[in-house]
Length: 147
Image (cartoon, rainbow, N blue to C red; front, side, top):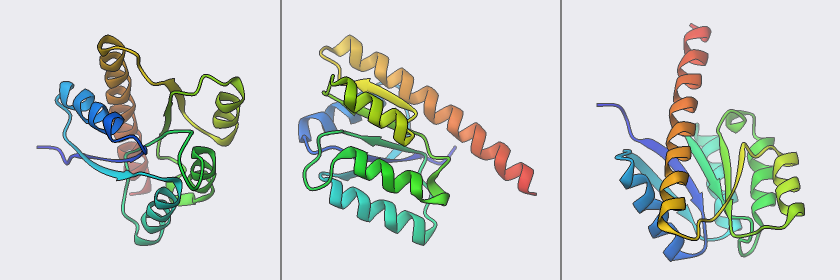
């Protein structure tokens, strides 16, 4: 059985965390979720990952986090060489074009508006599954090249 995907979710709304988990469960994905309910905690986790060489398969960020905004977290992620290959999805309620432009400029792989209904949520779960599987195959290929 393959190892579970390791995901960091930076989200301050407990209801959205629950929905995120349910969406991944609907795809029968095995995952270990670390939740940071503010940007400061997310940055601390990112710093620990980079120094402890713990691997992450995906980082999902909300833009509007307390303490440090999602763009600050993304800046930390992309500045860390060991995390540059980790896909980052910005999953947010923000429809502001400036937020999307900033996320793209800072290196987010996807910018997705939070769903307004169950059908949209399940579609987002499919997208996340594809990103995880694509990322796993890319990491496997990179590891094989290093041998």
